[in-house]
Amino acid sequence: MNISGKQKFISIVGPIAFVLVYIILFPTIIVPLLATKLYYDIVFNTRCKPTRRCIGDDAYPEMDRKEVWIPSGKNTLCGGVFVDKNNKSSKGVIVLGHGIGCGMNNYLNRVAYFTKHGYKVVSYDIAGCSKSSGKYIKGLAQSQIDMHNVVLWTSEQEEFKGLPLFVYGHSWSGYGSATMLNEDDVKDKITAVASLAGFNNCWDITYFQGQKWVGKVMILAKPWVYLLQWLKFGKRGVYNGIKGINNFGGPVLVAHSTNDPTVIFSSSIYAQKDKCTNPNAKFVLFEDRGHTLSRPKDCDRRIEESCVGKTCNWKDKGNIFVYNVDVHYEWADDKDINAIDDEFMDMVDEFYTQSMQAKQA
Image (spheres, one colour):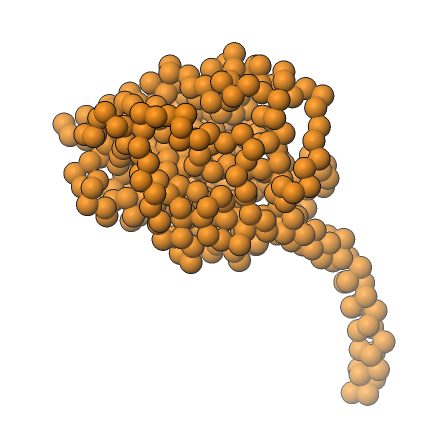
């Protein structure tokens, strides 16, 4: 075949091959990529407004809040330093992170427990939530980035010098509190971490939630979820919790419940227990404490019963996570929503205390 023959062959076969490749790639690569990008834009390119049933400071008159502003990359986080009015001394400072669809005010019951028991608490709104800056929440890895920066900020404040630093992360921040431990610069600043109802990585929880909408075909989005996470957050976008716990090496309390409807057990950090090489990690598994963990079981039961068969259409929400929180609590009693299970919280307090004593020994 001469040169002109080759050119003629290529001119005929080339377009056909291109079309065939496109036909093959379109349903297997292009569509999943575009669908994943659309999914991310819908879910994460919105802000989390304050929920309807937020706790106010007036519910805890014995607690003082000092508003602070904490830098986190390009964002500035609205935070609070909380202390008990009757106990200005402290056995430690706790960095406390909230779940998705919420803000720090949704966690004031847990903050109040800790201040009552002799801790100072630094809590904050994650970027894109409530009073913090940020056009939108961006993605799941934002919780670990902000918690990492809040821990560094807290460790540098003069008022906390000499105090052991603890971390309490639930749900979104349960994931964030464990995954931030992949960063070495926080390892020597933290005495102990409580990672509660946290998911292990961004893909597992995304698949669990996404397959509710599109079924098992959601598996096609896996490489594109990781790609988007990397493009948005770099290496932090693909961190996982159990590796962070192993990297830390210090005391970590991992707690989960098998009936958690939000962070299904298979996507949890606890489910990776067999991969843990950290001898100072403690794993606690419940069967009937749902997602919140820190609320009395009877209160959880009444909340679940109150929203059975109920639907809402709040178009002004603009964020699926805030909507889910509001729908869940709309018909519940405030006392049930804000109730604290002292037995569970005492377990966390005891874990912090023992970790502090072991470090001082």
